[in-house]
Length: 254
Ligand SMILES: Nc1ncnc2c1ncn2[C@@H]1O[C@H](COP(=O)(O)OP(=O)(O)OP(=O)(O)O)[C@@H](O)[C@H]1O
Image (cartoon, rainbow, N blue to C red; front, top):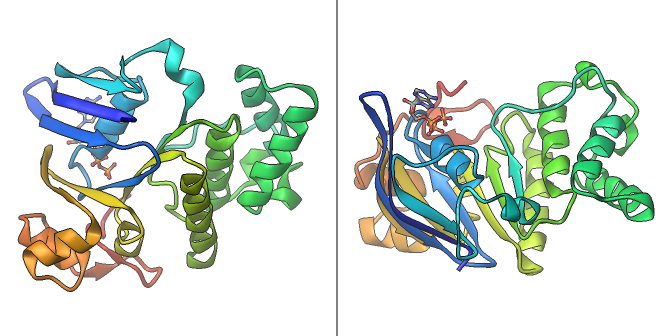
């Protein structure tokens, strides 16, 4: 078991943001967390990354209770807002994070080349991050999360601001990573991405309202699409487009 979330609740003041979440995520699967803005996805992923703690309940990664420093090398976390040094070049950012993960010498150079090829930023590696577009920053953040070849990737909206063609190639990379036994947890608003996950957890108002494979969720609700299934399970739905021709469950997401 890669992840075991046991009766996790989270409260910010009076606001209960996560409500008794129970969920197990297997090694080698791509698990999608799907839900409208404010549902609690980021809060949950942050707890899994060890950056926040539940008010009650506990999260276990590889059998170890989070937060655990010991596990940080086995986790790659990509936050929703990019944590990059904007005044440095992409290469300098990659070097900095490599050092944190004790990647040095030839291995460091190899990994930097590999991850930048994967996100198609090799030609921009010498540019100052300040001059990167939003989508380029997302891709650089993803490259950094992948640098140390973690067993578990926690990716909070990894493809926001990335065009559909590149998004496709990034998803191909996710599937390749899964084939090598890695576990991926991905939050998304985009329905065609949800369909690519092995299993999905639908979250609304801090509650996990359904868990299953995309096919199961559609079958259970007699739906043709995940979007419809989400609605049947009691999720909020706005039938709008996010501008990329993809359907979003929450179009006003920032
Ligand atoms: N540090 C905090 N203090 C108070 N409230 C918070 C804090 N962090 C998150 N929240 C609240 O928790 C709720 C869930 O937020 P969260 O970011 O987890 O949602 P989300 O599903 O990831 O949404 P989005 O897709 O927009 O990121 C929101 O109502 C948010 O305002």
